[in-house]
Image 1: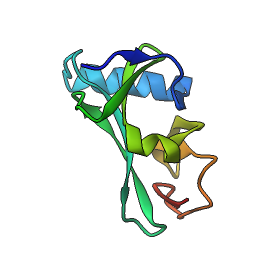
Image 2: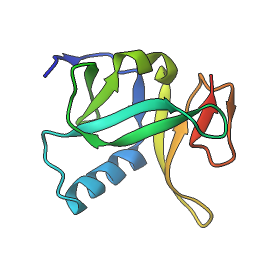
Image 3: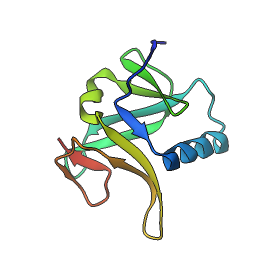
Image 4: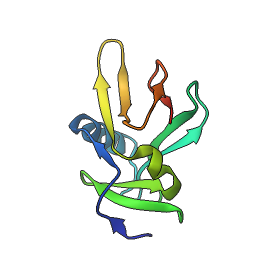
Length: 115
């Protein structure tokens, strides 16, 4: 596994941290898994976010964010720099949201963007 880097390109809100803790416990996810954050082509605006628990891969940088290992492919960091992941719990919306200052446009659902 790669060394843990100090300056993570993303932040996690308090709500997101609690949601990740709850998911890790409910799904019995091993401590060896970190939170994978990334992007992939597709979605109505050009890119969609990748978010989930995973094991570290060779092309990843590993960061420690709010007590969680965060795994980001080196090539994805450019698109994620300065992004905050939040958890929203409302009447109309429930789930993770992505506040990305690099996104020029986002879709109505908030899970895809253009850079």
